[in-house]
Image 1: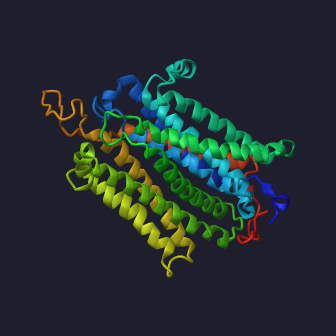
Image 2: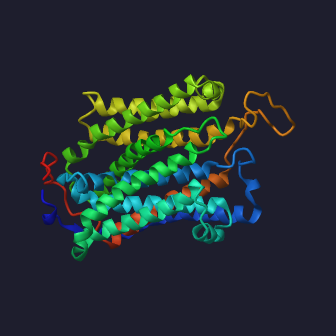
Image 3: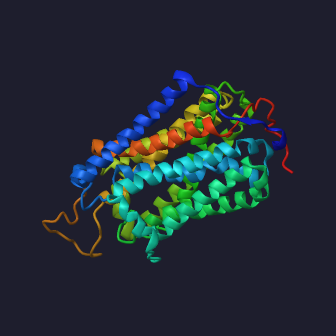
Length: 403
């Protein structure tokens, strides 16, 4: 189906259905703002974080949304960069999801750090030896390219920028996700991190997470607005999602096997994988079993692979598994004690050599949920006021050849 023949329209539904969804999303934003003002007034001692675990549950939400933003652009990139025509009509929605997820994630990140007014300093005084400084450039650059990419699809006067913007956004998001993963790869003091594989691992997590999120949002929007969606086009994504899930498991296995081979990391691997901590349970049951193995069965078993319901369930489990995976990486990695003096046994009254505990507070949960609320509000308002959604994809041919 030619993209030129595609007709887009705003969501015309109003009334209690639309405003109820908008109000529910706004409530989530309100919870986040209440948590922010409370923590800003009382201080971060009200959270579960301490001087050993400095990145808590809000950081998990923030990175989850930022990584999802990169992956949500998958569908747009497949249509633009790889010229796969059946995916082109969904490029606008793909761009909207990427922008909304990125802003939601950055909001959590900025508000969790405290004193968001000081962000101006971070944005005007760069320390290029810090990966965090590079990430500010990467986030802003991705946001600008995603906006330009969507603009080029919605305004015929900007269509000459469609291909360049699509290619630039594609390569930029690879760099952005590598930069996000490199936050952990560059932390040499913690045994859980300090590995270059975090860059490609985060790219693959973004692919599976972003695609799963896109499938759920697309199905939800088309169902809600009573628009026809070709099931074959939707089901075609199941093999792609299965491929991404398998790739994440493969790179995760490489990371742990190589860490087990290195003597300096073997203690941490036993801590993480052998059941010496609660994080082992989250890793094996939450990430590997529920977030990876079960979705693969739902996507590939002959009795399930033709069902839209199985695809949606697999996508939801991938979201849950990816969130748990990030929780294990971020929180579990900090829970293991720092190695300040290699090959020496350290004991003190300051918890040296002690496994750090962390229990997230309700305020942290509310702040993280607020970021999800911002994402949902942007999507709900976006499809209402601008033409992001095709009127119908009933005639879309998933087997149409590329140019």
